[in-house]
Length: 401
Image 1 (spheres, rainbow, N blue to C red):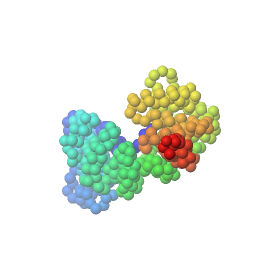
Image 2 (cartoon, rainbow, N blue to C red; image 1 turned 135 degrees about the vertical axis):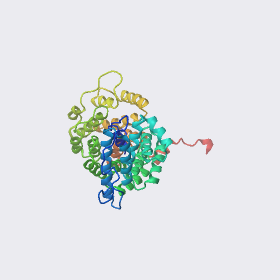
Image 3 (cartoon, one colour; image 1 turned 90 degrees about the vertical axis):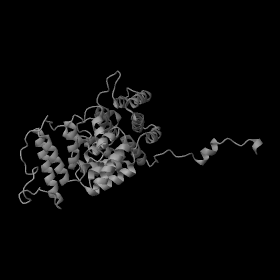
Image 4 (tube, rainbow, N blue to C red; image 1 turned 120 degrees about the horizontal axis):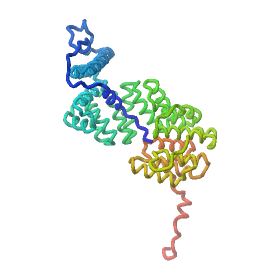
């Protein structure tokens, strides 16, 4: 499971709810959007050195833009968003929303439309961010980084730009670069929930599960998300706090197939506490027979014992071919967990196979690394001992002596 948090997608989605009028009607005056006679009568006449006051003005302008758009006054809405961006240039949401609204009004708020507009207007901050987001989704990481670097060159103090670059680097994955980006984003905005979640991923990957849990919990307090219980509960599992993990993962899971991962990790936690037979009920029913079972449904059948390892790997290969992901490495991880629960001797080899196959940004990679570290074992298979190497070397022939 690719455990990757996108930084800005919600900003683009948010503008989709703004109604697009066919033509502008007369705009009602608003002090935040109109040009007042003096700063005394309106504190939002122009940006000042007071950043908090500037951001308050920007937020008021954004609300005014939403009202104007709802009334069909789209020119006024775009003008208000442009002024909001001028008042708070480090908050890139205003530039993104303005760009998205413009594309929506021209019926170009599509992947092709975003790409064409970003190419035509390379200096548009909002379009560059939208195209970067699209490039991350399509795994074109060089393109996303090129877009984001242009934004950072213009807005070096914008936390979201650094967060998005970290997001792209996590997805590549380049965790060293991602950590530098995340740390910079958090220096600019210590309360960035997105950056905290990304740092949680990086900390889990390095084995700092306590730090990761603190980041995920802090992010949840700042800006709750429906998938937070999985991030928190699975991290508690990595800490070997199985009771806490099972309780957290009992939260209502999303629909399949994502929700199946919640069930798998909760089962693994309960099985450590209660045993395999007692915990099996938490898996729910097996999948219906027939083609088209979504991954990771076959893993549930495997844990139930209705599917063997060979069939599980066959299903993983089919899912991997269809989705261009790494279901085979996921299968090896869950096979390793089953071996640990059943106390079979192939668990270590399966865990190391997971490490060798899985991308670093997969949660199963983190799980395999945590299990090996907990057992005091290296992540990679050790080389042969001298005795084994000597035994494998054929004796020299008499002619060669």
